[in-house]
Amino acid sequence: MWGSSNTVTNDHHSNADNEPLMSSRQEARFATLEVQHHSPYSENFTTHRDLETEDDLENSFEDKNEDDHTIGSAAPFSGTSNRKCSRFRVISTAVTFAFKASGTIFCTLLTGVVIYGLVTNSIFPANETLKVEENSPVCSADSWSNGRWVSRNETAPVLSSFGDIVQWSGFPADYCVSNRLPKTNLGTPWGQNDTVELWDWRAQVSGYVWQPGCQENERRLKPQPTPHSLINELIYEGGWLLIGDSLSAQWFLSLSCMLAPYVRATPFWTPDVPWNSTQHLYLDSESPYVQQMKLPKDFDINVTPVVTILRSGLLLSKPEIMNIVKRNNLLPGIESIAWNETVFDNPPSLYLDDFLNPTYRYSKLVASAGAHYTSKLFMDLPLDKVTSVFHHAFEEWIRIINKMLDDPRAKNKKVFYRTATAGHQDCHLPERLDGGPLAEEEALLTPVYNWQVIPIFNRIARAAMSKVRHPRFKFLSIDRPAMLRPDGHILIDCLHFTIGTGVVEGWTDFLYSYV
Image (tube, rainbow, N blue to C red; front, side, top):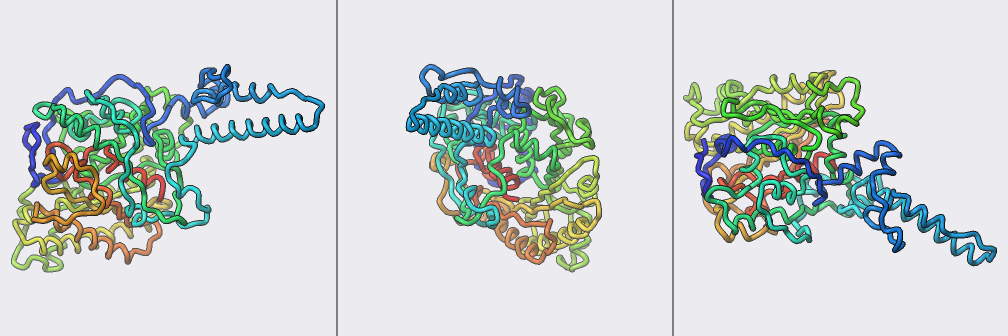
């Protein structure tokens, strides 16, 4: 297990389940809900909630900017624009009439544009691929990943609290509903790390957004997700079941920040809760936003999760992997594996039963593995032997998933494999912390943990998935944005990424917008 020290370390050998001990029992909930609009991942919830009814829409904004005849941020639905349009008087002169009529048309069109902008949360979508024809190909994972990090073009605020960090990271509230190490995973400087330099670093690393590398003829399926649009998809289309190691658990935490005004997280973490407990996000019945929603008839607010993370860092269970080793004679002379390292494993039968259960209403399963296929786990075997084990285990996992998708209960459900991410050597050196994103991936100069073979695992997975013909079983090669962010790791290791830097949030964007 990671030590309880809260100093910056260069512990490159931390793995994806040896997570830090809970930094403080008070690292729990933050009670204030103060919605602000900071980035594409946040929104004015009053605005989107009030889109439900026309009357509420009218009353959502104060009447402003009437006297100076300008349309301001609060004016579009106050009635001001319509009053301005109605001020044109009918005059007998044909020319004047035409001029006034043109003005009315322009005013109406402008009001429509503003309405559209509020509904989509952006008048001018950030992603240019929205402009292409609807029958154009959807941007692929490879194209999306072939982009670059660009500045948000916003002046970073002076951060001094966890709530500041959450909001500057682009989340809608100043808290996250999961209390499973949010301060650690959001890169909060505390203890011996509570320095001006690290607070400056934390502001800087959330100052970038991912610009997808989609081609001019490629498009998004949907605009970039807002909390409102994402929670609606999870409710009406079905929830997400995440399978993997602690990096997948970080994704769950990121979603608990993004969806904070709508959801509650279980379990509430205490030292007595098993570290590998399955986590869920459920709709919060006390949320004023949820109380105004019309839920599907088969949606049970107390039973149906919108997001789940189940820890299975090997995709298969240890006994299943041992059977694969014996069946394929991968480790001659070895009758059993001592499993020298902590790893949380679960058989696919466990999580696939949940995936197929209609009560849970899951629509997508996203799995990832790699960080736990190490020499240490497999009794110090050479990495080439470990790579062979991964290869056979992954092909067995594909076989199991293909069979599951033929089950009638799997109709319309989709499964994705997300490529694994490695770490960055010496990520806590000042030149790394202050260096910003890379333009291209860098080679690992010296072997660290199993990071040098994670790209090989991803190539093996790609080759195996290329043979899959099931239309609802896809390969998501979306690791490159993470590998360009040596500045974005948490403060206690160089493998996990800081939530709110856009790395993990990019996975949400891709799964929502392009799949």
